[in-house]
Image (cartoon, rainbow, N blue to C red; front, side):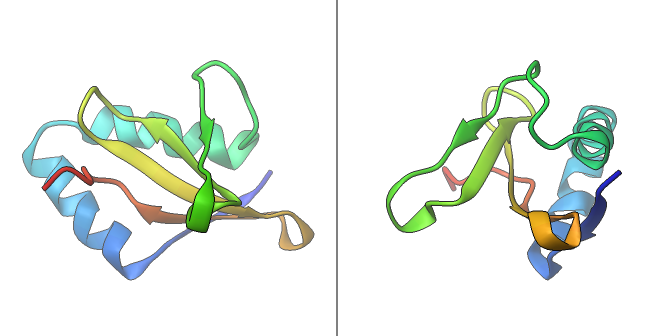
Length: 86
């Protein structure tokens, strides 16, 4: 089991997901991350460039859950849960 921590921005995004009726899908992804952040499916992407070491999973076609894994502490740190297209 991994501990899941939400960044300040992810907490704000949580409220946006609630309003957009995407909360059940996001919660399911968070539960998967708590069990095994490397589980596939659902697929995840390793980000590149200055975001190296950060992972992304789709909530839907527009919104993504962005996180990094602190393996030493068995912690998943969720950074964002909303679109980056705004």
